[in-house]
Length: 582
Image (tube, rainbow, N blue to C red; front, side):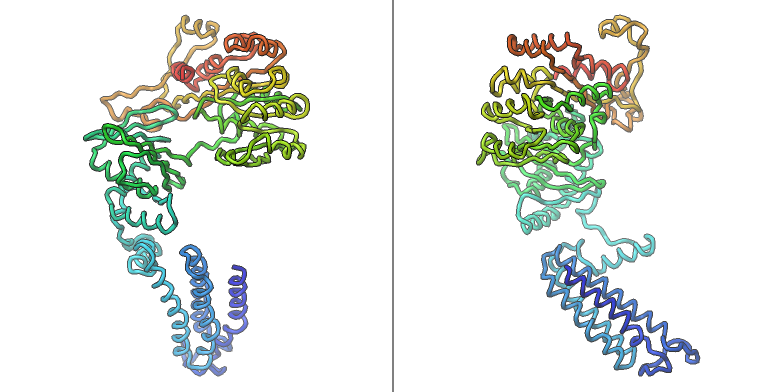
């Protein structure tokens, strides 16, 4: 590319120094061609009309040659061959034709030197592509004219598969050539192609991260996973759904004809400036087939624990614990409960710019990158943490980061470091903070060393936010406030999800779609470990006992944190109860 750029620099210098005075000869200065404009007008040395014609041709040549250079890379055509064919003939010969023969004849020769190689390339690349990707065709020129005229000319005619929502489907799961072939064949089934686009659009509008399709004999039952809860959708007919599934399997590199085996694949979809990755999982069942579609790419952009819903006062307590020089800190959540996000944002609240963070992470983890945390990836099928730990510790990091601790051997080494030298962060799948501590302790290692190292545990549950457009206020009864532990007179109003009138479609909230909730927020439980807790951990390592010890030390429970969210109108008591029962 540097070579091509240098050639264009030569061309620019050439145009400025050589072309202008040669191409635009003075009427009295020796141009062998006829002058342009008024025969009686003296332009002096430079003819502006000739100069404009040559300059426009030159700009077209630079633009098209640059486009060819970039397009060759995208279409995997020999870049050097096609750039040379379009660059050198015009660069070397165009000025000679214009300078040595009458201007109009020479200019036509220059146009030919520009247009012929360009036409050859366009013919070559168009033959490789679908009609909608071709250039300089009648439809393409009509489309360009429509844009230049502000839409006054009808744009190019849409193909059948281009109808419906403006969703771009991208075939994946095979080689580049096979993906292109699969996408080309998928577009032949225009109806099914549009149905898939409509399904992607519907998932986007509903904010659905998953769609479950249960194929029966005649119908397909649809369910949508929105903000962590499944919602029933309108059933589809079996015939059109079969065609739609076959198309999704095709562009995912799967076998459309196989309706029994378990298959998994992905395809891409671009819609509303969002690049979705759509995972297709199918499995034959007695009634037909069960299909799960999972969409990633439209996750909320969170940067801090405050964005996730943590109270500022609680964040200060958590930060104070995470700024210690040594010890063990555990992040935890339920499966699919946002643990990856909690871990990333939790580490983002530490002093990563001051201290050196390092750790080990499996190549199979596929977790988002954490800035300023030096994670060394390893293949668990070939290497073990205990074998890699010595080289990692020789770097003398201040903080150790391990999403997972594999076994007791690695645990012993890490606990020894966490006891006096390093701060250690790890994670666990658990419903509450105390349970997470017990789960990490169960990995192995000396219980006394674990009790000495552990200093804090942060757990999160996700619950849905009330839709601020349709939530309904109500006055709680004294009995309800007493049950919640809220002093009488402290709270006058609580909120619950709005319920639309099923007989009045206009009553359905335009923001949440009648669900009553929009988005999710975290309920956090933080246990700061003290000596009393450590003693109980060694003598009575039972969940109920440790839970009581943590509460006696002044740590708020998950239920208390959830009630605070309900009191402030962020969520409802019903939603807090649902989230805590999961």
